Image 1 (tube, rainbow, N blue to C red):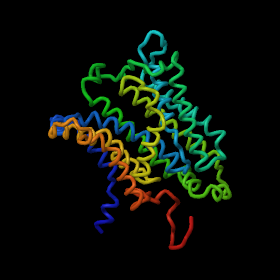
Image 2 (image 1 turned 30 degrees about the horizontal axis):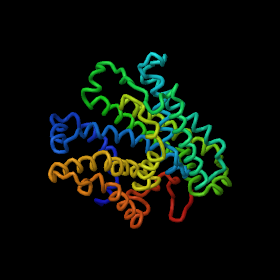
Image 3 (image 1 turned 90 degrees about the vertical axis):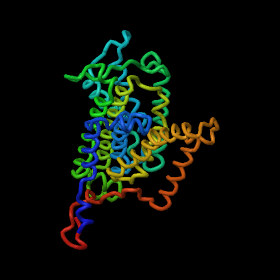
Image 4 (image 1 turned 60 degrees about the vertical axis):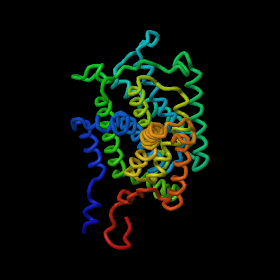
Length: 358
């Protein structure tokens, strides 16, 4: 009985409520800052952006079953479209607001995603992975070499913060709360969108495509349209995440940031959390990105503070990737389905009786 009650508790909703309440508790962030030597609220903002990006990849890999290794490129496309449209530099004439830039960043990334997916509709598995990997490298080098448009490795800056009534421009840099709530709101909206899509006919068709493309096509599903829909929606969300990242950072970051490493980090979040599990995506982001962005940095500072040694062997940063790799190997060995396996609730309609089919 208790297990059934626990199973019905919306843990993700509880987590979102707690995250929304965190900045509202007086002095809590200062207490955490004193313990961790860093602002947890600012670090969580980065996790929210990565969670949006991971949910975008979840739609392509987890739901539709297409092995995508270039999501970082669409992340970068969204960031650079935002930079080109919003940067306050006289040579860039647009200087539009945040919301139009957000829409155009998502639309631009989706357009490029659809153009890529068209020629690759017949590719599966490793072949599709290689094409998306190669495309990601093409985008990275294109961003580096188009210096007249993207500023190359110099990055586009400054990118102004959003204009929100009641929030001054200085407040965005003086406190973590405005960006914290902005990114949390987009994460919640993205999660709700993914939930509704998975429960729709389109989401169920994606699962059928993932499980057996030949069988789904024989049942009358248009597999080409399903793939295009997954690519388009996934890359659109990746572009939105890139827009949020660029605005949060105040610049577009180096083009190399949007290469293969970022794509692998996001894919690791899905694998560790559980492929096909949206709850697992969030847990994977917390463990993978939180480990690198929060835990490893805090551990390194604490060790240097108490050991007072310059030896690289006594720095956590020296061992952090080895520790992460070991944990990932152990998880894949003893729990290959991920920490939070996929719920089959959206894999098909409820069965009316034992042995009955949908």
